[in-house]
Image 1: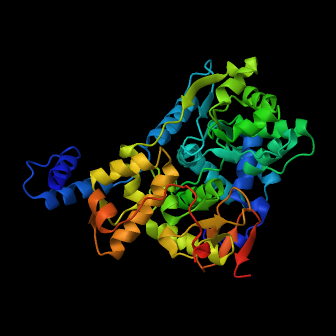
Image 2 (image 1 turned 45 degrees about the vertical axis):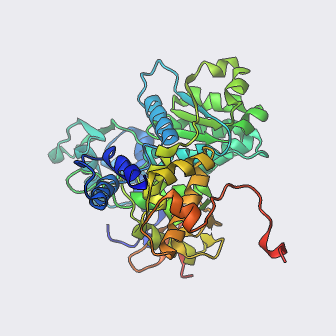
Length: 187
Length: 278
C-alpha cells in the first residue's frame, strides 16, 4: 500500500478494481483477476475488507480442497472505491484535501479562510492544513495569487483545473495529479 | 452603554452568571463557540444542505429534485459549495454558451468518465453512474439550461437514475420550470435563498475574523450594510480583522470602527479609482 502512487499502472489501481466489481455485481476472485492484473492475494485482501465493512457478501462458500472458490455479491454499490483500514473502518485521510480541491473548483476565486470555512464539514480542515495545501498547489501552478496580499487574506484564483480528483502531495514532497496521472511538480 | 451591550451579547451565548467580569465571560464564550466551528448553521447553507439530505433519504415514490433560487449575491453558490462537500456531490456550473451536448460532456468529465461521442451514449454513461445514487448532483446556473431548452436532458438523467439533485438559479427559476410541466412535478421542494442576517455575520466571524472579537453592534451594522450578501460580509470581516490587528486591538465595536479608526465598510459600490485622483 505504501507503493508510490506514480508507480502504479492504471489497471492496478483500487479504482480500476472497483469499477470491475461495479460492472460484474457477482463474481469470484478468478473472474476479477482476468480483468484486473493484480496479485490474487491483493484482490483477496481487499474483498475480505469489503466483506467486513458490509460492501459485499459471500453468496456461495467455496471448497478449497475441490478448487471451488467463494462467490461474492456486491450489496452496497457506491461511486468510489471504499478506502478501508484492516478492521473494516473507513480511512478519513485525504477528505480534507478532496473538499478543499472541490471548493476551489466551485468557487474559482477564494481565500484561505474560504477554503477552511467551506471544506470543514464533519471532517475539520485547519488553517494550517489549508496553508500547506495551497502552498504546494501554488508551486505546481494550479492556483495564483490575484491581489498580491499575503496568504490568509489573499484572493487566489484556480488557473489549472485538471479534473475532479484532488492533486496529492506525495511523501517525498512531489505533487501528483491523479486526473492527469503524472507528477506535475517538480517537473 | 457599550458595556451593557457586551454583557447582553455574552449571556445569550452561554451561562455566564451576572455581568461582573465582562472580559472573562467574553473569553469563555469565545472558546465554547469556536471549539468546533462550522458554517453549517448559516441560513442558506442549512437550507441547502438539509433539503439535499431530505432528497437523498426520501422514500422512492417521492420526487428527488430540489430547486434553490434567489437573487444573485445571496450566497447560493457559496452554500452549494458547502453542501457539495458535505454530501460528496457532483457539481457543475452551467455556462451561457453550453449546448445540450456540452452539458452532458461537462457532467461526464465531472464524474471522471471519458465522454462518449454521441449524446445518447453520454446520457447512458452518466445515468449508469448516477444510479448508484450515493452521490447527489448539484447544477448551478440552471437558468442557462432553461434558456437553452435543455431541461429535458436533466429530466432524462433524473428519470434514469433517481439521483437526488439540487438545481440552483435566479429568482425566476421556479416560474421558468413551470413551463415544463412534466419537470415541475419532480421537484420535492422549492427553496428561496434568504438574505444573510446578523446571526450569519456572527457565524462567519468564526472563520473570517478569527483573531479579533467583534461586538454585537458592529455585527448588526455589518449585516445591515451588506444587504444580505455573504460575500460582502466575508470581505468586511477580513478587513475588520486586518485593521483591528494593525491598531493592536483584539476586540472591536461599532464606535471604534467608525469613529476611532474612521473606517467604512466595503459595499461593493463603485468608487473613484485611486490612481486617477491627483
